[in-house]
Image (cartoon, rainbow, N blue to C red):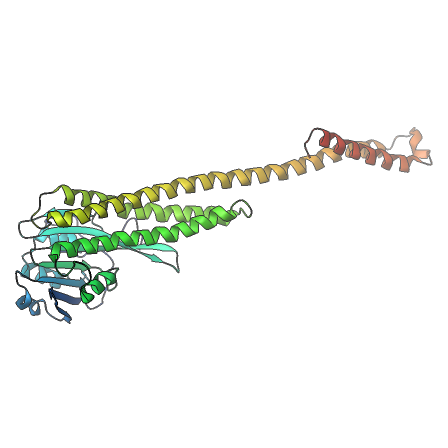
Length: 354
């Protein structure tokens, strides 16, 4: 499926809040996993029904419910009804082409962003939509499929490291956003390695494959920038917005995420400038190489022009041509050819054309 433009399955003219899944069609079973903690107490399990989680939810606890798979529209609608999620929010969750954004409602804060992965086999960036719904004590996260970059966060919860067990759902939401942004640096590292390899080899072994690699890396950078650029606006809005779901203490950590987002964008722009320079260098090398080839061919043609002239004159069949009966005429012809060729080579060297 194209990464920049995806085919929409939503019909034009549908009423706002109409729940239609837009994205890659999947048949996987939707998995519901839960992490419920309070101080030293932790409950982690996979549940079959969302109702199994409800008795655990209390004001003094934090419950993280992760939904792997959003293609089951009926299940997403049921979860929305259970936690009183607005239909417009559910519509955005189901639309995997939505732009990263954040929206504040009476009962929750909604954040939509993109999680990226690097396919080492195809050397391409793949993105997945992540939706977060932050309530007072519950955090819902929606993913397109199983697999994410949140394992370090889960380990911190299991081991009780840092302040994550005590800081509540807002800090957990920050930790998830931070994990996504940190993974952008991993993607940049992979692209940087490819870029560094180009820089090291382009002077010595410039070939057509390098130009293709330059264009391939540029496409990945453009795609990554498309995912990251709106996230900067989202984090900035969370910092400026007056929301009861994010306290001042968590806001300090979000400022760090904002700085990391700016750093990612700056690195992307730096890589793009480097690619432009490498492309100019590649074209310059190819042009110089072509000039060298043309120079050699021109020299060869210039050397043979007078030789061809002499051979043409010598080969004319005139009735009265003294050289035709001269015993040393053939030898004189070759001496003249060689002398003229050597003279031209010496002349080219004097002009520093060779």
